[in-house]
Amino acid sequence: MSKVSFAYALALAGTVVWCALVVAAPYCVHLGGSWAPVGETIYTGFHRICHQLDGRSLHLFGLPFAACSRCTAIYFAFLAGTVVYPFLRPLRTPRTPSRLTFLLALAPMLIDVGLALSGIHESDTLSRLLTGTIFGVMLPFVVLPVYLGAVHEFSSRSSSVHTHMKGTVDA
Image (cartoon, rainbow, N blue to C red):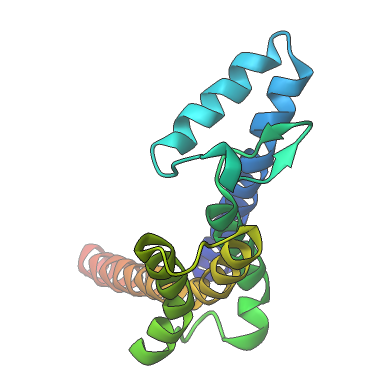
């Protein structure tokens, strides 16, 4: 397995774990006993990046996910985008989408938030899920090329340095 493929697999595994934690928090608290503090720790960790408003969250066993519905949609859509990424883009030649594509994916979410803040339209769970999904599914096509490109560049440099140093030692 190449270093770039390994890096992709690592990113995918990390994304799976991240998404699992979103759902694990209410599940652990629901189990109770020694699992409850584990769930509370997950909630605390996610609270650093998400407001976790109960009324804006999906629920499991009557308990909110560790992230609000929009963040949950972004994370799970990021996972979906990460899964399909290698079928649509080669791992070895990373290419990021245009800034316009990024802005078009971000725009529905910004509009939804802007309309809600201005009082023109109250966003609901469906609009949060849809706008988060649109943004989240596009995000791996921006993040992964940068990450994989850096891994490729680093492994190329390491390989070059190693070959150069080996030649120096052998001489």
